[in-house]
Image (cartoon, rainbow, N blue to C red):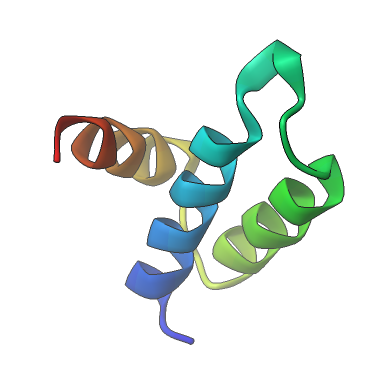
Length: 56
């Protein structure tokens, strides 16, 4: 997995989680975020991707 794919996955997992409603397993979000950060992603990268995915 490359950095961009990890960013896309992390953003997708965060959006799917549903915030405080906790619609998915929070460990999925944590694993995806850890992968993205491990590949050099920043919080800003993931936030920008979340915005892009919401708009798509």
